[in-house]
Image 1: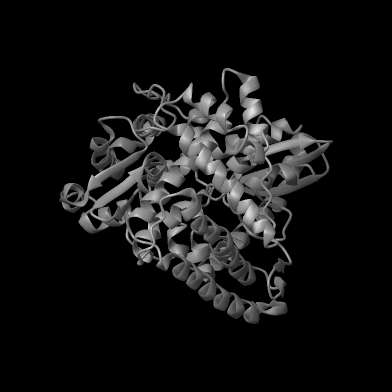
Image 2 (image 1 turned 90 degrees about the vertical axis):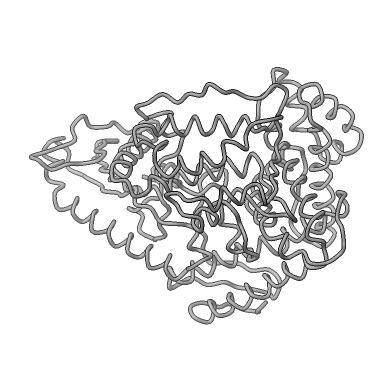
Length: 497
């Protein structure tokens, strides 16, 4: 790591060097582990962290017990509170959920203890802190599941919590910095005044930006929840949660039904989504479970069968086969090959299906137009909640407006833009991401200038003398222009108006 303050080309070159060095740290850190048992153990850990997060965030009928659980100090949870936690979970769920949740809590406790000794600023005090920590690290942990079968090339076997702890430590001290370094590299291409100061160990950037939605999710044109709230077809499923199972294949079946019914107006079921659904659906029968394992010889014929997607495209969509962490952290394939089997789980399948519905519908003109209307409704709801009065008209003299509002005796005119920009380019191609960002900023500034040029129509209609104009972008746009507002920062921005 360099020392001092860098910016511009010097910063980008230094970040490239650090990315290579840090990625090599992941390669070296995993190399001594075996490629079969250790990834399988990691998959169990991943399941336990998902179960912990779900159990901690889902309300219980016994509110007092739920409060006691999430607020319990982590040090108590892994010692004297263990018996009570295990009994609480065992009373609600079968399948060893209590064992995996306790393993996840022990991992969180040991990780924070180990890192704090070394001066690393990770503090997890309660069960809720541990659950939240794993939720924010989900993408990194899934990325490791993707790459471990290829990067684990040794003979050291990790079966227990203590044996797998070095992998979680690696996620914190190497995988996290890779994401941050890639983010800095992109910011250096977007902002001319961007700089990073380093003392050789830690770094301090001159500015930051939020690029992910709540829950560390990639932004979508329109989500399933958006369609539930604003769609024209009811969301339904004849299936339901499996009895006494916290996470199970039933959730994937319900997800398929919800997506197909929620997006029925776009004929999702008969798009290419239907082809991947038909491949996945037969795997969702039999005993309820979180992990789904199928022999390579059993799934390969389905992957290679003729179809609209084609064998190569189908395989690249469904099976992750790379060993690069930066690529893996932005990937959505539901399967990874471990030894002679393709392995997946409930969360990998549901997140793949949700992501692929955007791919299947992304080029459909009706979907693009309707998603814009849905986004406008989302913005409208936020504005109304913060005291803006929405004008009843949409046109003046044949000129169309998105959301014309008033507050405090002034006009606030909001344009809603749902133009997509793929955040995954930050790691893959930061230069292209920066160019797309500049293009969008330029287009949004021209759109605002157009509104300024016709604001006399609004002033005449509303009999008000002051008008302000904004663009609200569904996808993050990086700019210093206060009139261009990413949706994620809308509430913060309007609080300052």
